[in-house]
Length: 410
Length: 185
Image (cartoon, rainbow over all chains, first blue to last red; front, side):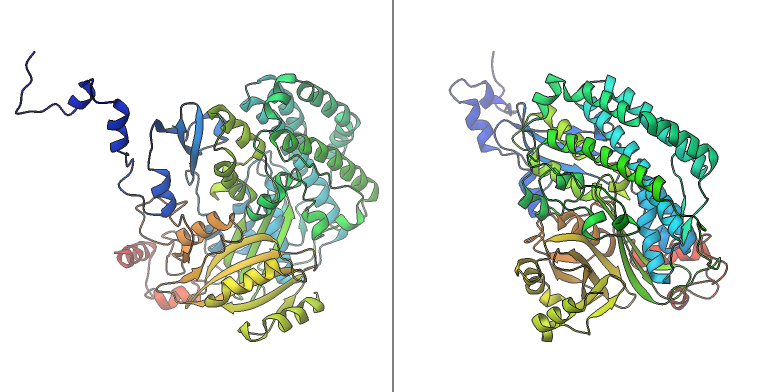
């Protein structure tokens, strides 16, 4: 064969046995995007020997919604990771600023569709602070009762998802049984099945009704046993335990620096729970513990959620015993106009701290409404904890952190 | 309200505070300039009698004539939330030092504030858009960014005062849309 001198083969060096392939590759460190604009992008999108980029998502089954993760991998090892979000961004903060105070509540509802009662509660609490409203005690108890039920539903689902992301299909079916029972219960209470829109400024939408109470009593009589048996399915599973132990360790110092809250922080041994650290509602009157774990790995984060379910059952039980009589709504005008001012309120949700910061300018619409969602902060941890692990462990770590994309993308 | 915290803050930051320490319900608020952010936040975090180690929230605010960056902090030494407002940022080119040297987790919250308000955080390694697409040219949460659809406006009040001054009296949703497009260009 003759080579054509006029059109040199660009891959000639690769055919030449005297040139080592590694030399050729080393000379040309590839810029995958046209010059990274930020320091971090430049670092991430510069590939070295043997590295490649792999897109996981936005439609990957274990990304819990629409999350795209760009993995930089070297063989089966993850070198670096760049989560790309915004696929679900609805501009809720802007919408709230163009709605009045009552309307804003139902915009915050679908933020995190797994635990929407908490997403309502934080802004409602902030509005109440702005308006200096005193919430009736019965309403506060009903709020605690309904949100703790929501927490159990959310944690039950998380446990199932965690197993699902690790490849076990069975547990998620069982957790949906649990979740569905609670959802039916909350439907009876609020009138809606997923996005409850139950909290109101100054109280809740409706009092406890007979159907809710009978369903709740029925469920409470066997909830502990159910959870025990679900737990046995996973906690005594050798595959799951060996896979999750020691994976994705988060030490308490790093957790605080990453602004982590909720079960992810408590699984690293920091006993921060807004219900006790900054008490709100009627939590000071209720008797419950804040479980913590020291290991900070995926298994600890998973087990901590089971501990929390048990505490939630305790709280529900206490609420039912201590429930006072009285109205469930404070007397308020239809159109509320708080005096100019600022208010910040935070609640402890199943994923961490949900907070709202509201600025009023004296009109009937919030001037600025900031919503803080824990999933958004926790998703950063994936970039911190994954490098060095296998590609398959990315999913395990992500599932143990339990972000919900609706909350991440606001 | 934690009066002791107020005294501590006044004693520690005296001349750095640009206004009085404000307290309401369970919140304490201090105001500082953007230039003081690094030192004030570092003292709040490091000094044992303050010990604000948990960053609860970081967000941007557009007041209409200037920008603010608002930090909410928690500490076991007080029962209040501490709100630190870095006030008086120029609306044309808002700049503030990054808090990522203390809280690495502030990185995304700062990216969000940049994405929504155009506030530049000096020292943030990854300051790029987070929600909006990379080629998006506007900052949606700024007050001069009007929503094309104003049907959600409550009939009780009419047009908001600030938008009244910015938009012509006979503005329709379509006009507002064109206006926002013109301002972007």
